[in-house]
Length: 152
Image (tube, rainbow, N blue to C red; front, top):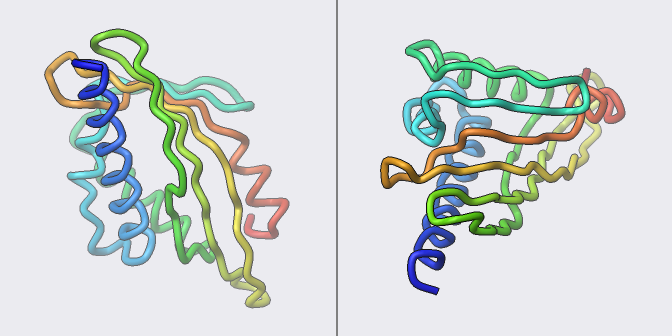
């Protein structure tokens, strides 16, 4: 497999680490390693979901924005945010597509009911500087899922 195998292994390692860091950030947002989470992303990125497309630059505010996101998930009742399955497909020598199956466990604040939201995100990873960096992602409708589970 040569470089492709190396690229796939490095993309998998990126998401194993990203998943661990995301779960830790949900469990304790005040002590989240937002800098390491932000390091997973390229200098510029684009995201798409059923509501539209957004893009931006990873500036000095990005780690704080990520931390606020985990605080919001925690306030909604989140207790676990884990990648349970990863598929990596090398697209060429410098890019890969990663399918990550996530599970978001929660205890609903209003009544203590527990549940899990399972979803798949698709990410695009670039290795131009030698390190894997997420530059794009496609996600399902998070707001809809949160509403369906009574979390929003």
